[in-house]
Length: 384
Image (cartoon, rainbow, N blue to C red):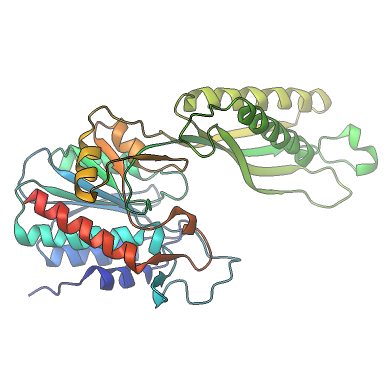
C-alpha cells in the first residue's frame, strides 16, 4: 500500500530539493513522479532543450473535459549572497512561520496541490483535477507554454486554471505582463586617455539604463490615478550589469537584462518596439565612432498579462471557495496569463505574501498554509 504524506510532510520534502533555476530540477520531478505513480496516478513530462529540466503534469478523475488545473512551479531563486538564519533548504517552523527557500514561492502551494491530487484520486472525483508543476518560471515563465501545449495532447481539456502564486489566499484576476531582453553591448577597446577613439560598452549601456530611468519618470507622471495596480504604470528595470576589463580601458563588453512590466492598457509588443527603437538609436551612435561596435539584443521572455474576465469561471470558483466577494490585481507576472492565452479561464490564488518571495529567511505562515489546506478541501468537495 502506497505511503500517503500530508501536505506539511510534502512541503518538507519539496523544499529539500535545491531547485534553483540555474540547476536541474529532475531530482524533485523524479520524486514527485514516483510518489504520484505509487498512488496510481499517471504522469507526463515536458523537458527543456538540455534534458536537465522538466515540467510534470497529471490528470485524476473522470476522463472528460471541463476539469480544474492546479498550477505551480518547481524552481526557486538563488540564495547566493543572502544571510539566512537557518538552512534555506530545510523547513524550520518557528513563531508560527515556516522558513525555507520556496516555502512561500511556491512550494507551499505545490505541496497542497500534490496532496489534493492524491486525495482526488482516492475519492474518484466526478469533475477531473489536473496538476501541473512547471520548470523555469523564475527566469521568465518560459517552461509553462510548451507544457500547456503538451497537456492538450495528453489530457482531457480542462476549463479552469488556478495558479497558486502567493496572494494571501485572495483572488487575483489581473496582473501585469512583461518583456525582457538579454543585451550585449560590443564596444571597441582603447586606452581611456583617448576614449573618444573607442567605444565603451559600459558607457553606451549606461545610456540605455539612463533612458529607462527617464521613461519610468515619464510613465509615473502620466499614470492613471484610478488604476488598481501598484505602481499604476509600466516600469523598466535593470537588476545586474557586467562588463569591462580595467579602469583605464574603454570596455569591450557590457551585458545586462532590461525588462518591462506592462500595465494592461499597454501591450508587450508596444514596449518591445519602443525598447528596440532606443537600442537602434544608441547603436547608430556607437557605429559612427567604430563600425565594429554593435548591440546584440535577444528576446528573453514575453509573459502575457492576466486580463479580468467577464463572468470568469475561474474567478467565480475561487471566490466561492474562499468566500471572498472582491478581487484584486498585482504587478508581478505569473503563468496565469499563459493559461488564459491558451484558452483557459484563469485566476491566481495561493498561500503566502509576495513580499516574502525571493527574500532571505523566506517564510510562509502556518496560518496561511492551513488556509491553503482548507481551500483544497473545499475544492475537492466541489469536484466530488
